[in-house]
Length: 285
Length: 296
Figure 1: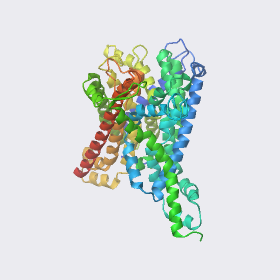
Figure 2: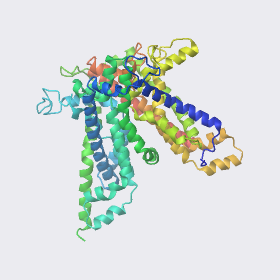
Figure 3: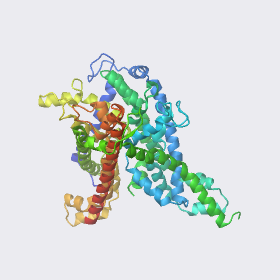
Figure 4: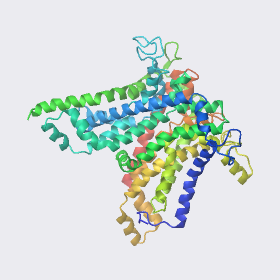
């Protein structure tokens, strides 16, 4: 066994670690078991047979198919937009001379601590008066604006101060000589940004993208506020409504719980190695 | 060579403005403008249907004389201090454990990290089942051990502690990994030299390890605490703020005021106060972090 900085571990430490792991594995296995328990059988016992039909049944009940489409659209568009905006602004702040660049950085750092929940009510009112959409006139009156619309669900996830801040840190660590040499060779600024610097920060792009996807996919409060029409609900919201109406159908509920957690989980496991080394150091610096 | 240095300069500056503007416009719309709107509306009476009417500081006065507001503020602080206070100690302890050479350590670490990927809705529903008074396995276990039937989510003394525990369960992995990364960066020579000089494990931890990982711990406390001040989903899904307001948080009563009572002015006042609390808390925690650096 490799010697680690914390020293060799004996039986006692292994026992503790196993106990800790059990606190996590047992609830997860229990969740899996319940999701496979046939309807009508007692929850919490080992069932006679495992009913994989719970999964299609769960997604056929309610409007989970529509919720899935809504969640995928909101999360993908938000992620793409957040990556584009984080890279472009992060690059400009790190590598290009900007009037007031320091003030922009101060603003972003200040915004890092401001929870989006605080902005929920005023942002909702602003969405209501967006001009020329949702029946609104040029002055934003008369209709419902972006309320009850997919673009409205995306709005708070389109940009993040953290994403810009992280990308700026990573671009900043790259040498200026790369860009200067390319300029001498006549490369355009767009080319320097996209073809020279950005390929070197792709791990950071992956991390920013996953944070963005997770934020949009797992959001609950904003969809709760923004949707009146159940056809525009996302999975997290639709699941909560389903729970409030059918609170005893634990097997179907847990099937949905499991499935809607998988996308972010796979993304996490996929980029786990970037998480530790890159982001954490960038975030603490 | 095609361009003069001064042409580069203009070209580079224009590129910078073009690249930074769209993001900053969005940041302004999503984060800065709403704050201004909230401050203005907090001085008005507004029900979404008739035009806002200026009422001075009456929203704040009404809030300060409303016992439910103080209860929600107290619940929010209890939740944040409870989760982060216990959580930081547990995260350091678990990180120390995983910093040892454990067989299967990587897998166990990943297991602890997994709930971080799940939404609060998902974690809340899973734990609602685990704590259910009739089918919950935790309920069964506690009843078997103590002979008393616990009602975790409907007993006013148990509801908030239950939510603290499941939130800590979800968030532990993320903060533990941050501290673990800091632990790995502690110079081994320091620890070995201290060991040779006869320092006991506790002394090595408090005099070497803890000062070395201080900035990571400060980061964890600030991030975790500010996140905890926004708690809403767990209470909404698991207890609907009950029993008798025991799990209502500031964000919860802000939501209620805005979308159930249609009292936008008062909801905005809560938002402004919460913003003030976030600013004060982050400045105080930063100050405490800086002081601990000077003391060390």
